[in-house]
Length: 116
Image 1 (cartoon, rainbow, N blue to C red):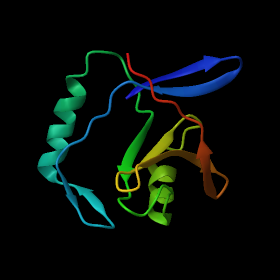
Image 2: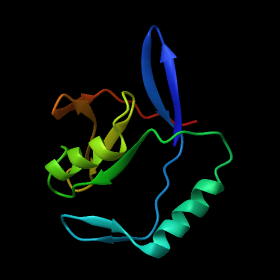
Image 3: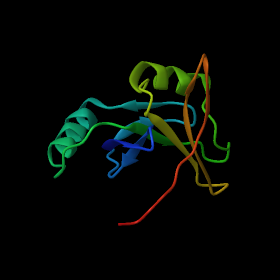
């Protein structure tokens, strides 16, 4: 959750908070449970700043940072805005990467992490 900002004619996403909920997950798939969606809605309602959804994050433990075909389909269906990003973390390899849609595929996106 965050905002879309502009600087020197460029648009970028500023993520301020990440929210999640209970998930049903395997090594290759993740689904929100019905109870999880209610919990997620409550988390969103409790955010104390005006926000837009700027993207999503997920992990590929031990597989590296990339977008799978399923990830690209998710990005295209849910996060297709010019400033939307997908953040992928591999906690095993201690890597992270951000990606945006690019034509029929995806491309790396520049990103930075800061602490307020």
